[in-house]
Length: 292
Image (cartoon, rainbow, N blue to C red; front, side, top):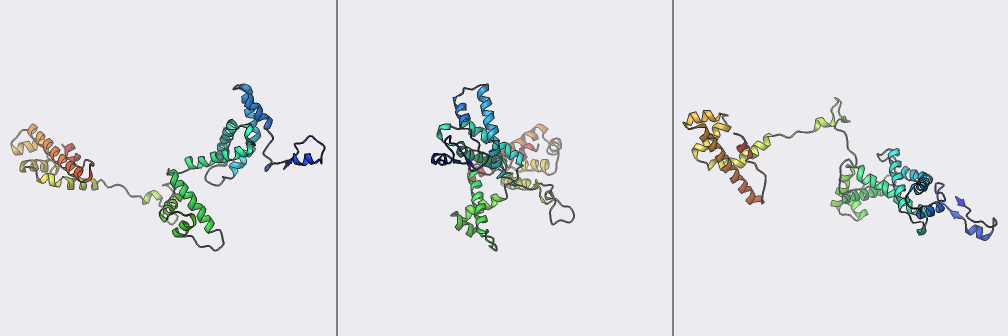
């Protein structure tokens, strides 16, 4: 759209030179308002001028937000994010350094892109991985834009982008991280109403027991015969300390001390052995000390 900024006679050469081409109808002439805003101190008058500028440029912010529709976010939310970017642009703009539109468009666009980067991922991934995802996504689109083009391989994408195949693989994995399925979603190929949650396994606590027993096995073998018998009766035959004391002819307090001492010895040996092999580790013998 051409806007005549001259005050001379229509059709004069200076009139033609003064015409300013604006790329969009939502780019109002607010130079005077911005200069007035820059000269005002904080207060009600400045707030009123700022609000007037926001109202004047809001259609442009909404237009920019519309570029990002159909990406999983509602248009209304996108418009709110774009409006926030517009406010930031107005607050930071210096009218002596050029046209506001040239400054506001990248500011608002960047705000919307940051919203997608920081808020819209179902799984939070590092910035580097997000950038790999974008490169892979653009490369796949460019390689398949011609009708009949086959689906590009990892090697094709790597050659097109200059990335390594490992980086391409990381980016392709991230393509599925932007949005997720609900665990209640029914499987498309299931006729009997199975949901995604029905396909998930559960942790088996028996594996922890196996690890604990195998870790403590050598330590138990090195205990004196009486201590091994006491631990066997307590933890495998589920006998109380009183019954063990009656069977062995000793006091219940003595049985308790022997169990505590034996468990501590086995645990310490297991931890020391693991520390020697790995430089530290968990406490697989803790169940023995808690099983009294």
